[in-house]
Length: 143
Image 1 (tube, rainbow, N blue to C red):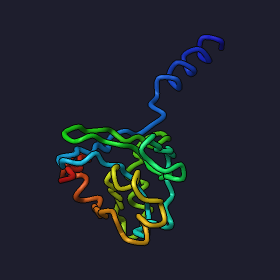
Image 2: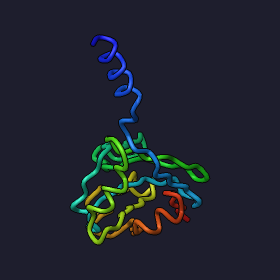
Image 3: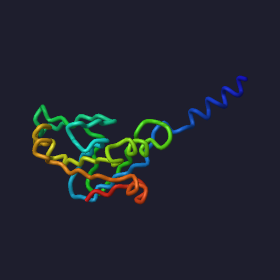
């Protein structure tokens, strides 16, 4: 019995507890900040990783909730916690079964407060269907 429990514990610990198949490549010339949501309205954001970005150049109230930052020419895998096809379930459960990727220029969010950025729509919204994600092997190229 103790050998079976040891085996079972080994199998469970070997399982990935995140789904990191989503990769975003920043092909733009800007340092970008990403936020991903099930809803296409940025003010209703639900974000899995919350990060505060502040800079000595920024005002003290410059805060944005985001998933990750990506420098020009770099790529980043974005992980969701869970076992199995978490990203597929995330997109399937989303509004119109679409992944909503909000892309902010990092300099913009450091220069302006969050409300100004949102109210002035100083961001890009990329909406990607599950079919498009599969076709592109879960890779999004932002230009």
